[in-house]
Amino acid sequence: MSDDTELDDDRAPGEGGGEADDIRGQVLTYSAGFVLAAILTAASFAVVHSNYVYGPAIPVALVALAIAQMGVHLVFFLHVTSGPDNTNNVLALAFGVLIVGLVLIGSIWIMAHLDHNLMPAGMPAM
Image 1 (spheres, rainbow, N blue to C red):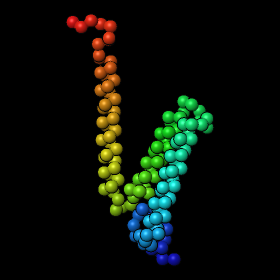
Image 2 (cartoon, one colour; image 1 turned 30 degrees about the vertical axis):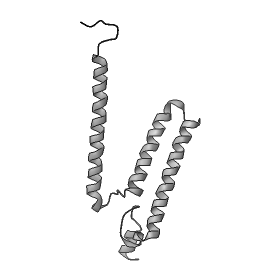
Image 3 (cartoon, rainbow, N blue to C red; image 1 turned 120 degrees about the horizontal axis):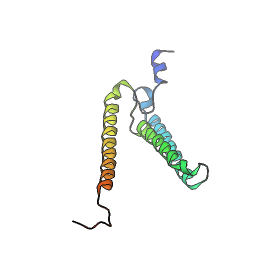
Image 4 (spheres, helix red, strand yellow; image 1 turned 180 degrees about the vertical axis):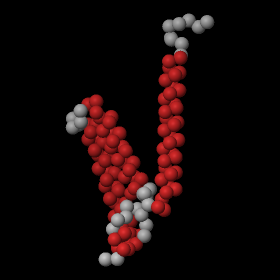
C-alpha cells in the first residue's frame, strides 16, 4: 500500500485530489449531504410535533439539530474542512461568526437597556 492511497482514504468529504474529483464521487458526496440534511430537517419537525422530547427541552434540541445541520452544510456543500489548504476559509468563517455574534448580542443588549429605561405608559409627559 502506498502512502498516497493511505492519504486518499483519510480525506474529509469535499476535499479535492485523487479519484474523488470525478463526477461520480462528487455526486455521491452531494447525495450524502442531501440525505443527512433531509434527515436532520425531518428530525427537527419530529421533535416539535411529537412527545419524544420533554417540552421545555425542545428549544435545546432544536438548537442542537440546527448546529448539526450547519455542520453538514459546511462540510458537504461548502467544502470547509480542516485541511491545510482551507485555513483561510476557516478563518473567514470564524470571523463571520464573530461579527454576527457581536451584532446579535449588541442588539439584544441595546433593546434590553431601552426597555429598562423607557418611561412607563401610565406616567404623564413633563
